Length: 348
Image (cartoon, rainbow, N blue to C red; front, side, top):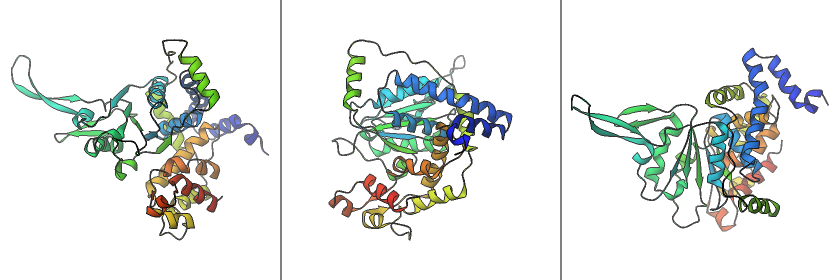
């Protein structure tokens, strides 16, 4: 076993030496900053280490994340705490059945111009104009308002009355939703689901973690103050660094084959997919899978992507992009079960 494998930090250092000065500086900053962010989030949010890692990957890739969980699983607290640790501007929208699209994007209003008295149109920005937007309980509002986020998520801009208003980078939508089986929820349209890098499941804590929550939050009134560990400019540079991580052709091919195997009509599809899947994932899923694997490798102090990085991210990247059929429902097969069967069939 070589020393890069046993000493990942040295692996990053050697990778930086092979690149330019900017990359060397960023690699030196990357691990301490990421560890500091985890530490700050951990002072408020108990457990959920994997979910925190997935959110960090989302930010490093420049994508958006859908967080699914029952009420009371600290979805909102987690996103707010992470935004504070990142030192980014943060806004929250509580999605309700009567929320209008302009409540998200902003709108033009008529005002009198000082001095001349002329009436002019003035754009009043909505809460979407922030670095981190928490779309809280996004599936409690009808599809018309849900779709108000589509342009912002894809183009990082908002169009009002024919005028395009650019959003300041970086821009992330971290949306929470309750399970769609709950009363008063509207499933997100497939086009919008596909814009989310991850669909992360926020599950209940273990016994010891729940005891820690009780101990921490029933003995004090205030929530610990979170220290800012980075800023927008540095985060944008980290996003550039992620894209410099090399990927071997065999690893890229493994990602392509995994995504193609979710399509029941593809020759690579295993029996579980042919039996239980109606529609598979698109090429956007492949791009997101490889990008997320690059970020995961960096977070684990490696400057190369392995097939294990790709396999570890299959569920959060694909679970909202694969649509199961009526046979899966009648046999009680979830999307996650089908994807796990696919991973076994395509074991690297």
